[in-house]
Length: 180
Picture 1 (cartoon, rainbow, N blue to C red):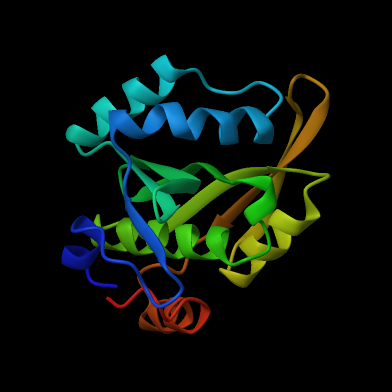
Picture 2: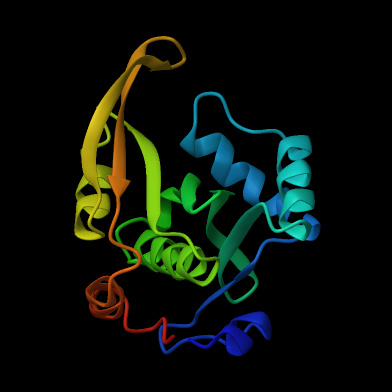
């Protein structure tokens, strides 16, 4: 999907619309956040992150089906890297390609921002997310001990291929709905 189509909120063939997160979306994002994370972000944190979007330091997206927000994700830009801060999908809408779509959009946003690498942390127990990230070229680079709630370890994963033309081809294969 072109940047213009996304900004205009045009749906793809599957009816899913991915667009920038706005303050008005936060109330609908919070239930997904609370269901997804033991220590969820507050509305204030999301508002602060959205403010940083205006300065080009962050980028957050929502995925909606009709009028219902079904997922969201974001990245933080640090020099020429992008750090995936979160990706979450409503429980009843998981395993439908929504996280794939969000991650593809965020990867393209990172490329458009001039980033050459993506990084993230993922729970050791979240093998489904790890599998998704591997599809996108992420590889484990280390472990942060007791990272989550000072109990569970996080795997630090990196994808260092964003500058390669082959990576753009990979994104197109993984998510043809995102046409850039």
